[in-house]
Length: 240
Image 1: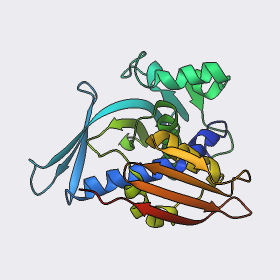
Image 2: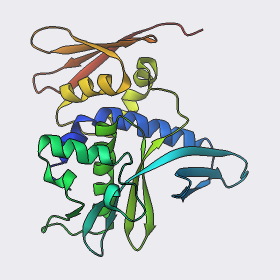
Image 3: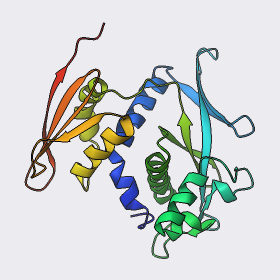
C-alpha cells in the first residue's frame, strides 16, 4: 500500500490504465533500444531510438508530482517550483477540494510513517499517482521517470497513440489481465468504458455481466460470484 486515501481512485482506473500503459510500452519498444529525455521548459517527453536518433516518439508531458526519499514526501506539481499552478495537476487539487481528500489538497504529502520509502516503494507509489492522475484528468498514459537521488517524477502524457478501441482492448486483455489485480473488477470495467468513451450496458439487474461497445465492436465481460472477471466474449466489426 502506498497512499491509502488515493488507492481507491487508482484501483478504479486500473484496467484502463493497464491497457494504455501497454500501448505506450508497445510504441516505445517499436523503437528498439531507446532512451528518454524530459524537457520541462518545452513540456515534452521524448523517446529516441539508440540506433537511429531520427526515430522518436514525442509526447506532450504534464508534470503531476515528484516523490522524493530525502524529505520522504510527495510534492504536487501545482506547488512545485518546476510545475504550473494552473496546469493539469491542478485538476487533482480541485477534485480533492470537492471531495474532501486532504492528500490531494496539501501541497506536500508525507510518506506513511510505517513504510520504508525505498526505491521499490517509491516506484510503486509513482504508479499509484500515475493511475490517480489518469482517473481524474482523463489523460493517458502516464510515465514515471527517475530524475536522480532516488526521486521520481510522474507525468501524464498526450502521446501520439491511437484512442483505445474495444477491438484493441479485446486483443490486449488476455495479456494485460494476467499481470494485474483488480480489487473491484465491475467498477474497473465501468471506468474503462467511461475513460475510453465507450458505451456500457449491464446485462442484468444482478450486474453479472457488462456489454461495452464502440464502432469497432462489442465485448461482454462476465463476472463470477466474487465479482471477478470470469470471461470475455466479443463480436468485432471488420475494419476497412
